[in-house]
Figure 1: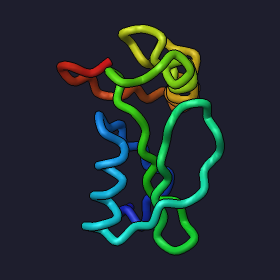
Figure 2: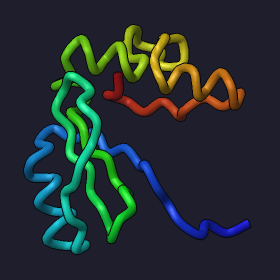
Figure 3: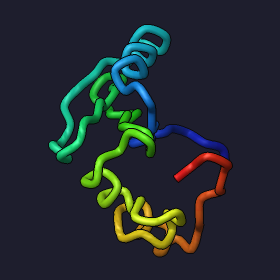
Figure 4: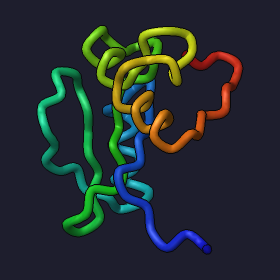
Length: 101
C-alpha cells in the first residue's frame, strides 16, 4: 500500500532552531504547541496537524531525552524508552548507520 500521509515524524538535529527555520521557510510549515518533555523540541504543523517533531541529535541529547527515547545504550532497541517499546511491540528494529547512537 502506498504512503498516504505522515504524522509525528521525528527529526534529530544538531541545530533544532535552524532545522525549524528550514521546515518553515522551505516547506511552509508553522511551529506549534507541544508537550513539555523536559528537553527542547519544535513541533512543525501543516494546518492543524503536527507533522514533524524536531529534537536534539544524539550528540546534543541530555539524559532526560536519552531516557525518553530509549537511548540508554549503543543499541537503541535495548533501551527502555519510547523507541525501544515501539520496536519490541512491532518486532522491528531500526537500521544501524555509522555514527549513530
